[in-house]
Amino acid sequence: QVQLVESGGGLVQAGDSLRLSCRTSGRTVGSTAMGWFRQVPGKERESAAAITTQGGTDYADAVKGRFTVSRDNTKNTLYLQMNSLKPEDTARYYCAAQAQAYTYVLNITTNYFYWGQGTQVTVSS
Image: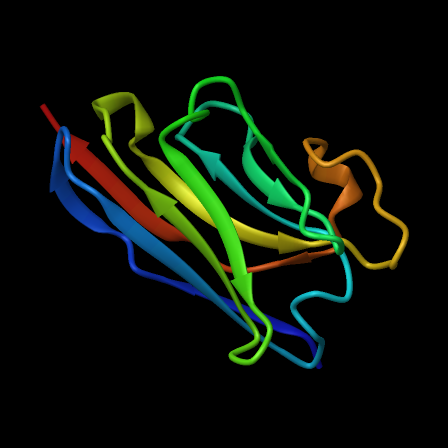
């Protein structure tokens, strides 16, 4: 059974940093593309960052230069380092994994099969 479990969220001030973790089980973290998505109430879930099996990365314009996605295959964990946080980064952040080794378009929610429950990030001004 595949499970994705996020952690590391919290309440921080603008300008602070956070690192989110997504521990995976039942699958290998580098076997398919994985991504971080975020969602605020009343809005659609949107892509923040993603990483391919080869280590290529993709970022939303809103987080480019501030967020870094990475993975540790030895720990079977995906990470999202978030620096210079802004109030508009406030959202619930979800870890997701595609189901096949072929990498589908990274920033499309429906291309991801496995999802975690999310972790809340709140940035105060």
